[in-house]
Length: 338
Image 1: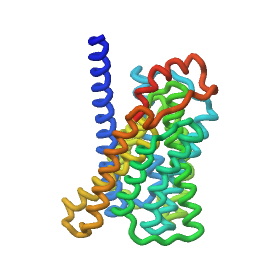
Image 2: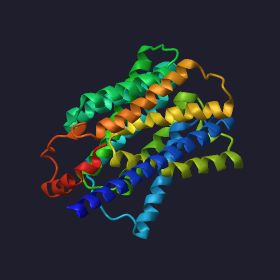
Image 3: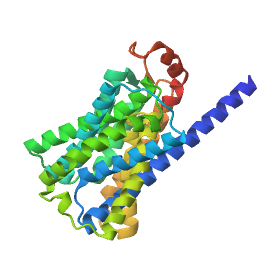
Image 4: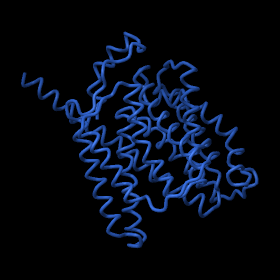
């Protein structure tokens, strides 16, 4: 009995270490790509965000082909209908976010990003039979309140901006839900799922990206003055994007879309803190510090509340999951609760 308890404790410690490593990987790559893209767009004028994302997925595709050739990615199956559905959500998410940022004020854009958490909760409740405890719900509200105090300033909205934000929020929430859903349903690892979806996403974005970018910026990507320095930053951005794409799939696979969104706001807090450290105390005021404190308390509370029995649990799995896979999924069910 004692040996069994020790084995469980070791397993829990190992899982926690892997969870922390996965999240640290996501934070490092996400912050890194933000810095590189900001330099690329603000300093060197490469304002073609959709096309750049297509290049990111093209690089990721090459990485998955190389790993498959080395034997690190095993053959797996994913129906084409599922691939196309996922890519549709993902592409609408990318374009929707770009358009929302262009048509809306920064304040409303931040509110739209915050609304992804309740939308993700709704999807998990309706589609995945997940139920939350009172403490888990309250901790999510506390995170939303804290981040809103930190980031939401002027709020103005128009009809077309609202439509763009609505599409961006729902497509992003659906895409993140589908990452977790497809990995569970088809027993896919992060590399496998990327291998199935990245080539389609790269092709579709590289074909439509220049058109979308011209519509948004009235500039042609083929007319851009490419220099050795700008090419270096494009290649660096694509290289970091491999880690960003992979870490997102790893994190959502290990956690859930809701947990990914809640913890994701920690990156917002870190960006604010780093901004204060590197660019002085301009903008550092009492309400921002107060908001950051509330958000951090909410995140800690969420981690504790959702890990408690009944804090966040999935009811019996839908009958659509194949019986032979259901046994494997039930065996790892506890590992998926965060």
